[in-house]
Image (cartoon, rainbow, N blue to C red):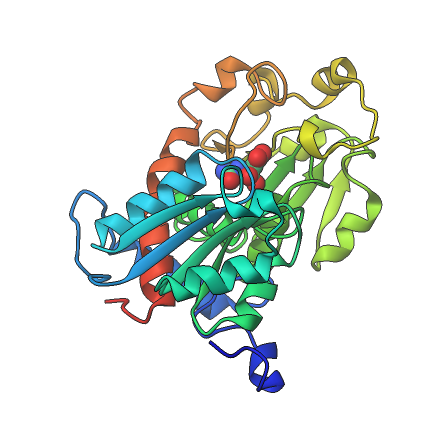
Length: 313
Ligand code: NCD
């Protein structure tokens, strides 16, 4: 394949790519959410028969990786998993050379998770097949934001006007960034909460109408949705926080959940660390939809993959 003769085309991400929520509009988001309602992994549909879906993971993953794989297989696609450890990436192959290799193997779509923000976009600008971002550094995690919105819509009539509290390590969270963009586009109101080290003031500039509170009580009071985030120790690099102080002030506990609306939903993208960002009791309480998020993720990713490949029905 030649990747040097047409600069202009190279600079546009390949058609069908899903790189983030920031550049989608409300209509596109609602369209994907609607499409997901028609998808059920228990009722496989061969929408992607003959398609090869490559899963390229440069970071650990349990849910996202298996969810994309099960989604693709539920639509009769062929899947191949490439992990950075154990592959030629360890030998120093560059991201783009790996991408060209996967394309040469016959990939029709690449799902990629990478520790660097912008890695999926770079691939999408150099390939002629869609690239789906499965999480890039501290940037975006669009499929997670979509599956969370889908999960909320299974419990609430509309996203518009909902009060969403996002509590935890917002700064390091691509889940939060995508959820913030999605909320702004569909008219949900977001309150961010966390210690200054994990939630700098500048976070409010991400989207219009955002605000910050420094107490968990203020954040969750009257909320329809409490979205809890993991403290991402692997991204702390130099940031010193006292975990004891963190749990005292920001841990989502039953008494804090009680300040939210009676029918409030407790969400978490996983993996959860019981006893740190939330108590075990909260994780397992009737209002917790943490397991349901995982289940819904498969339908949502079926919608994402079929849309990306132009096979959405
Ligand atoms: C998250 C991620 O990797 O961004 N997990 C996920 O994909 N469900 C959040 C996290 O690791 O805390």
